[in-house]
Image (cartoon, rainbow, N blue to C red):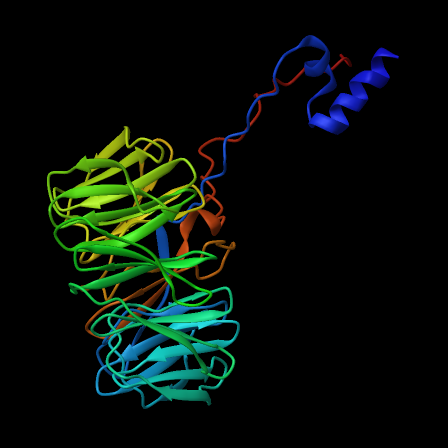
Length: 385
């Protein structure tokens, strides 16, 4: 009867029967850390022209805007050119479900990711002013000077457009399943995806940059050196953290938020109250917002990318690019052994495919033997006289 009770506990709670009977708690397994860096170069190609914006990638290809009104797709495994079209853009493209979306100066393009053929194209009233976002089957574009515009991805049909009005400035955006959170100058605005209705509008200070989302919080940093946590539903201020330099950007998980600032520090703060968990000095100034990939925080500088253990802050690895990076290197959220999992693009027109070294499973070279193994046997005397 006791064994049956223990087995039931094992099936329901997932615990070891011995632990269930003894009252001991099962040991918590630490999350795996993705071995992103160090990485080895799989290929490097020189593109036909310099790059005009950061890239995007999917499982098969990398998509890169080039100077001179050109756009190129290269194979992710080899760097070979897949196709090239004449479209200009100064913003990173967005790829989803086999379609590449490109915001040009006066048009929005949708191309087949496999061959570059047009699916559709629609006019834009003015230039895009931030990278696009795709969520809940809606393509969101920020259009100068203050418009949030929603398109249907299948055919480019306009769903709604909302002018935010008021003071404007540099823009950035984060999205979830219900809304777009737009940082516009000193304002942070929540726009509902269903109809473009403004849910709340909060003015903070300075120039706000790169909002991030986690559970019930919206995070945003400012050029006033302040970092803010706001209620996702109401837009009210929950906590505020003063830094020693402008906040470049942040990334958040359910428990922690990672903040990079121009005092050359990367900090991990508790999501709920802003208490500092760890901080790490940086050798170069951060150029992009940090990203969290499977237990690793990755942060790009002008010519390099560094990675840290997300929980403890320990340094894990560094990649040094051959020139100034065009945007942060792309990282596959689920890196696979022997595969190109990181793509770096430089402003001078080079694309580099990298494979995490620890996922290459290199065998250690054999050491030459200096002596034969075993022990020396002595010759036994013959039993015959």
